[in-house]
Amino acid sequence: MSENYEDELERQMLILRTDPKRYLELAEERILANPDSSGGYFDRYQAHFRLAQYDLALADLDKALALKPHWIFYEARGDVLRALKRYRDALDDYNRAEATDTERWRGGFGRLYRAECHARLGNEKAALEDCAALRDDHWTPGHLGIAGNKQQVAEELRRLARQARKPRLV
Image (cartoon, rainbow, N blue to C red; front, top):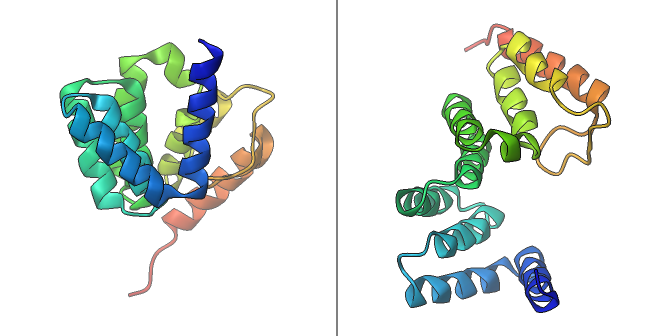
């Protein structure tokens, strides 16, 4: 990658983090300029997700996937579904992401997020299987949920699974 490309990417990510509404405007301009590009819809999803506009984020990911199936789009849709507490649907998309590009998917956070979905559905065994497959030096700051090293993640997954299995009083 050229230095200009990396600089532009860094600039775009700074806008997304600091001014998601502006990023949304830029993404909409990209879509208008090239409505058949999955990348523009993915960019717009990122802004909608950052703004907690989950239904709009889902619609953009559905459009991106219709144009070009990609593992990162499935994982991103899983993230949105997870934010909506639609854990079973999120699991389906994490599984699709893994099946689409196993090697790349395993290098990201998808396995951690899938483990969380399993735990929130009360399936401790599946959650811990995903946790066991994390790198031994795994650590996450918890920006999207579970924080800590591999052992701390496993403890939190156990807690979430126990909580999910408790009978709910109506």
